[in-house]
Image 1 (tube, rainbow, N blue to C red):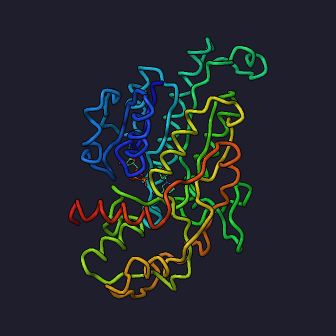
Image 2 (image 1 turned 90 degrees about the vertical axis):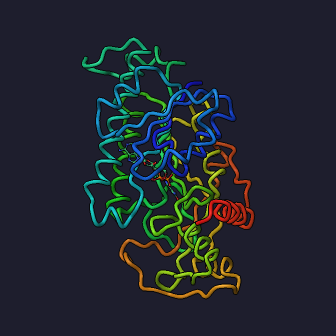
Image 3 (image 1 turned 180 degrees about the vertical axis):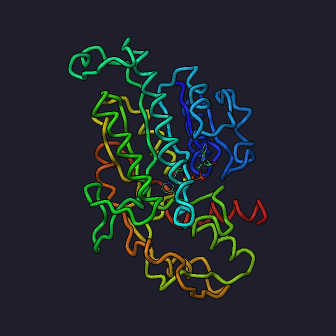
Length: 339
Ligand SMILES: NC(=O)c1ccc[n+]([C@@H]2O[C@H](COP(=O)([O-])OP(=O)(O)OC[C@H]3O[C@@H](n4cnc5c(N)ncnc54)[C@H](O)[C@@H]3O)[C@@H](O)[C@H]2O)c1
């Protein structure tokens, strides 16, 4: 298959690209490097399956149009602004990258879908009238949303029917974008699928203050610095190793069965760990664990564990890398790339 990966130089994106190349696909990558470096793809650029890495900003519809000069069997849309605090400080940038850019990619995918199915853009569209012509001409569109869309939960794991709550402009933008994506399934019969990954960690995640909690803790522990827990540390996270996340996304696009169309699936382990326990585990008595006030307590979700049953049933997905194994692989990467 030929596939497009937007945000393909980013943390999860580069692992998805690696996975898709291993699976034998021809991969086109686009990234504007606003939160990534070409270095992330350094060990993949010579792979014969990597057709081209385009530097481009998906907020520009002309860039998106040019990307769709070739047809794709699957579009994996990962490009986004990903930081909650940034979205609170500067909501427009998150809105433009997460909603407007998604609309541009969706529209280009729709034009490809129309072309493949001999449909005329601009004419009144009635799905019932054309449905019989759409079989086998439906490229898949995989949208990467986030567990941050969910509202507060009790003690139970969060399943996909749990109410959403836009606690930050980031969460709101992801809710808007995933609804837009799903609407293209309902309106046009496009094969759209939504993944809601829980907190993903692993090699290539930024370990400075812009990074994820695991990478930040590990980098500080390596440097002999104290680990700073925000707030009480009782907040929990369901930590998914990045290669498991990439395998989940790859599968979601590779599987052709129509039963997955319109699906919204958690990418989760089904187990959570408190941030305080995580810090103690990583510090291992070698560095102190301290507490600092939370910078955005209003947007914090205290208990975040995903119900992974639906993904297991529909996609056959179960994570393979334990937290201990994932932490040690990430630590080894950080040590080798001297932080
Ligand atoms: N990391 C996590 O824990 C996590 C959890 C849930 C969901 N997600 C989602 O997964 C996706 C990937 O996240 P990540 O952690 O790899 O983040 P990332 O920032 O490393 O990757 C996003 C990539 O998109 C690129 N990008 C941003 N705006 C762009 C634009 N306008 N045009 C082209 N490229 C653009 C960035 O340069 C970056 O490489 C995001 O959609 C994110 O919301 C991540």
